[in-house]
Length: 287
Length: 322
Image (cartoon, rainbow over all chains, first blue to last red; front, side, top):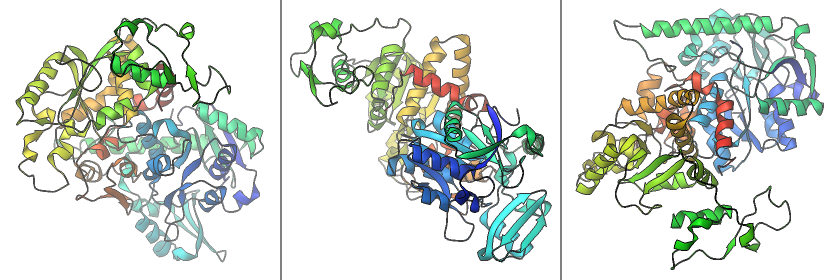
């Protein structure tokens, strides 16, 4: 169950080359929200929009495809998307809200739906929650150190960052690629990530990430009835190219392996926290 | 039921035939009412705001009350009635609740009952003014007469604005008069926030029903659902935005999702460097940021079932809500 419950797993990428041009991998999130927006499945979506500094995202409520396109691509730092969820329903007045988030943000969303003490008008208005795979996240200053000090690339000249095959890579606008072993980045991870027991956004309607599929493609899990409905319609309308996940390398085995690694490592952290002092420990939020 | 059935008529167009004889004379229920047409009843025939005369032969008899309803009371201490408004904001959902799951046996605003009766669930709104002996007696009586006491909203749970108008402010003489109900009685369950959302009150009401009247399986689910809210009650009568600092960030648990920012009713929180920054001058100490935080409590056994629980609540409400 490290991959959560899902109805189908697919290898997919966006059919729109315009989306793929600047997307992280298969452009799944942007394409799916663009479809949902055009079809009226959602009125808008909370996404990681551009911020004041390079690769520092700010959560925005995107209500047009143009705004969605601005939010393409992964930025490996914190973007508090949940902070805009009530803005979306109250200030923007949206009745059908989409949201993309890391596994922890999707957990926060589902808690907000089941225990909505301070979430008036939110629980019944979530129309599509898209989760992204996540091993850990970095505070912005940590990311800056990794890129500028370790990779020796100015944040301003970076056009893309990527984690895969054991490396953290930064691509510059002039075509240079700077890589460091992933091991060097561990100390910059934010502490709160080390108690997380979810790798592939188990509670999302649809979750997606690069792991398991070839470059330029994404692994997609369709999890809920809502997810199944939206995904089915998007496929029917030709918005995605798909391949059978069983036919691609490295496939779900790698996703399962990484999920197991993350969860067992963080389970161990939780156990260590419980007996951290002498007859004293640090809090476990899951008890 | 005078006021209630009148309200119900406005919202659902249903008439309570059996109760007709005792219809009050004064602002009596009008014979012509504006009836919002239920979508499935008559599709696209009359515009929603057209006046429709009620035809007696079309009036459905109210279904027999469900025998096994629970009894709920709303006990009003020193609060602004906002929590009760939040309950009423469920609109048709409130009627679904009252029709099928709960009788409102005590509520100064909506039910004509003067003394606090025996009841299954007491929703207590507001803090206790200890300079008013009636309030003190009432809260004690509520504890005696109710099986489950719920602190509905932040005033009952933590004092909220009745104790500290603004965060960090020295308490003024009038502030020490108001105690969270947990200072006087044992409280079973907290539903913090100012006010708790209508959806959260609805969910707790449904779960309370399942806990008291459900099958064994439903009881188990309801108990699991309510446990974190009981833990909040056990946690104490003090809350503050600082709880995020003390019990989440200092514990190394914050991952910067931003939920607290959305939950805060006074916009006292913003995200700085990926962590919540609390404006203590703005904080009203309602406790919702901590309660809503996914790292204050997160019970996989319940939240993993979000889809099924959401569907069950929708079904229970007859797709009620707003």
